[in-house]
Length: 312
Image (cartoon, rainbow, N blue to C red; front, side, top):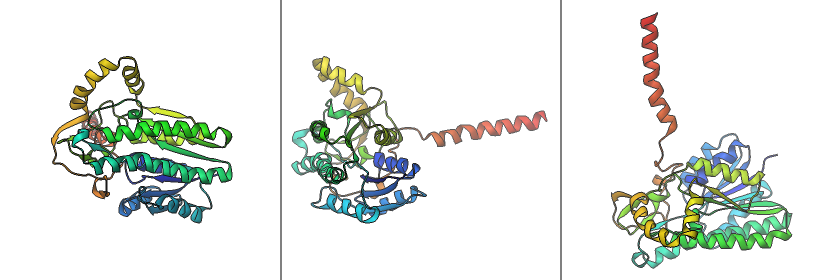
């Protein structure tokens, strides 16, 4: 039986991959994001399923309630709520405009809490439902030049744990926190930047589809927390067991691997308004395996054909 799945932040990156993954299972979708034109693209990608798109800014008062009402009006209820909406900002804390810092926290932490409030109200009424929040390995460790994002993800980690404890009296209602490491999404280029260098995901980098699979799997096998990233555990151990060494190394490593050499003037990125032209499934930080396969197999096939003609 198909489920009704609400995905906030569905227009790009992990949210877009998650929409495709649930569509492949035949679930009915309610897709929310700020840019209606990009939502229309994602809707077209989710074939053979019912899809409702709702233009939504998760930081606006009443927007999440309106999203839930739209889902219930269209499909009669909500079975799964996935919150992937997030923005990012680069800069030294004292050089980041206060309004940028506050809006990142408002989007990445307070809006996630707002989504949980709305979703859990519906789930408690029916006694069943799954809420999936998207955290980060940066909810367990820290990195310089990303203070509002780190603060938000640490806050989300504690928030999720507290709510999970409160849900012990409602076993049919589950809250899962999925914590990715570096992921190939456009969020780094879309980030506000007051550092002068464009950010990038430090290796190893996972594809957004891998995170989407973990999110979908949480519906079938709910878990309190899921980590997606080969080095997440290693980084957490280093941060906890060798904090002095970690703090010495993290700055140089961030400048080497977490920032590109491309200069950029100070700007607000997509923190306050969407940038539809920059929204996509991937951010271009991993090779496109399909294109790579075509690039390799094309010449190989041509050589094979030439050999067959010569030998024939």
